[in-house]
Image (cartoon, rainbow over all chains, first blue to last red; front, side, top):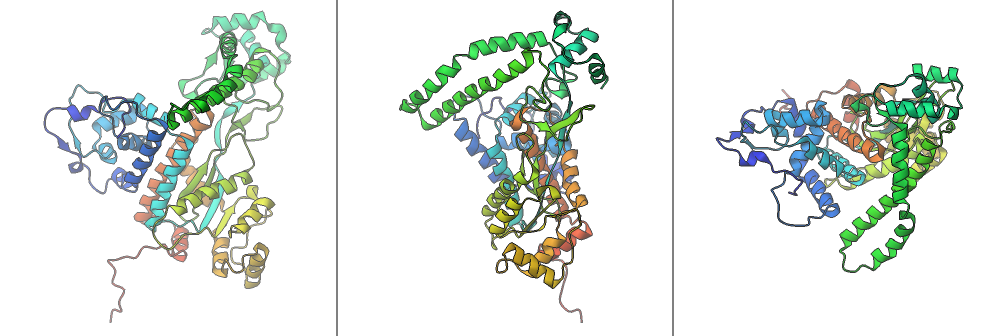
Amino acid sequence: MRLVRYLPHWLGGIGPRLHVADFVPETLPIRQWADTFPWAPLVAAVESSFARRFPRRSPRGRRPIPLRVLFALELLKHELGCSDEQICDRLRTDFAVMSACGMQESQAETSQAHFVLPTTLAEFRGRLDEELMDELIAIHAAAAMDEGLVSPAHLVSDTLPVEQGSQRVTDATTLYKAQKTPSSSSHTSHSNATAEPQRSRVKPRAANRTCKR
Amino acid sequence: MMRRFGRPCRGQGHVCVKLVRHTEVLLLEWGQPINTLGPQGQPLLALASDLSHTKRERLASERNAAMGAHTHIRPQSTRLTQGKKLSHCTIVNAYDPTIAPILKGKSNGPAQFGRKPGLVSEPATGFIFANRVPEGNPCDASDGLPLLDKVQGAIERVRTAPRRQIHSVAGALGINDAALRQALHQRGVLTVGIPKTVEPIQPHPSPEEVHDLLTEAGLHRKRTPHQVHLACACGSSRPVVESPIASLLSRGAGQGRYKGPLGAMRPQGMTVMAHHGATLVRIRQRHLSKRAQKIRRLLGLRRRNINQINNQKN
């Protein structure tokens, strides 16, 4: 496993080790969900892609966080609807999340707030590219086809509109808005806007309507 | 002051126009030599024999990224700093020019803007075989062949026999394109599920209609009438398509928090994989609709119940 940045703290804990599998029944939804993933080929694909694009410069350094943990956390984040911070917190306290991340045993000190820091997860996500994502989806689909669960014989193609917002902001209208409704948070912008009112070429009535929306 | 810049999850973003102008002018001045140094660096990089292949590739990609960034910021800065009114749909987001309006805007109202990722899914269970986040807002038909190439890549990874094939592709009226139909027919894929008009597709075609469909596609020897019947039954249906879309939206696919094509692609891909897991759990537990069960039975995907004794009772 490659070094990402931070030391996995749970490997250096003291006291008795807790077996994660003892606390997670097989019927638990998260465990059933995690069992559908072919983890070994997925992690191997991530590892080879990272090794090719981000070659290791030195063999020295601290022990890395396993890519299996980071990859599972990234998937769990979307499955459970958590933020980076929330999913990293749950990895510290939730045995089901530990099980889904492939951790067999847990041993941690009470003073440790996180097993994985949210910034580490963000760094991992930043290294994913389009080619790798397509490969991961193809591996997962191929594993499902191998198992005989799905068939690509008949397919439906469609688009998913992802709305990011609505915008009708031009430089001229924003300058007019800044002139009319100065923000208390930015005196610089107000002075800037009032200094250049002649640049606005939009009728005041139209611009006012824009501001209301 | 300018609104709606930056990441929406950080609240209403307010950006000082003056600050943006000063920063971008400085950035443009500092980045000016890249136009002359960049092309000079390319042959030098090719001649550097002491560098490893990986390092050379990385440096080349960084050089291209630096040149592309400067090219990208230059027209933006001009648009932001000249104070001129922008023409309609010229630019919708200064820091993310790869997204485009989804709807046709009107003069008295703002137009939605965002992305339209393409999906290819199985009609029975909603398992998504491939997704694609396009740049800008191209027509839906342009997603067809790239998505099928991705599905073909997944099929080639399958190790067990028999070899899977794509028999038919269905879709909405938006992907009704003559060139796409012809390309699909050349690949041996039926297009009876893609409507040509607003009229609904005949779910139970007569033998004569099946013959006509196969003749029109030129697939008499490649596809059977049974496959045509199945293709008609698996035609595009709004509730069927909405099911995986709703699943993706519930997992956060609709929230574009990150900018740029990569920023949109990563959460989309992870959402699709999380959806895969949930779909496979449903299939294993047989929590499927009657329609899905029937289609899976016709496709030969029904799991045998090993606990049931099928021998004659008496």
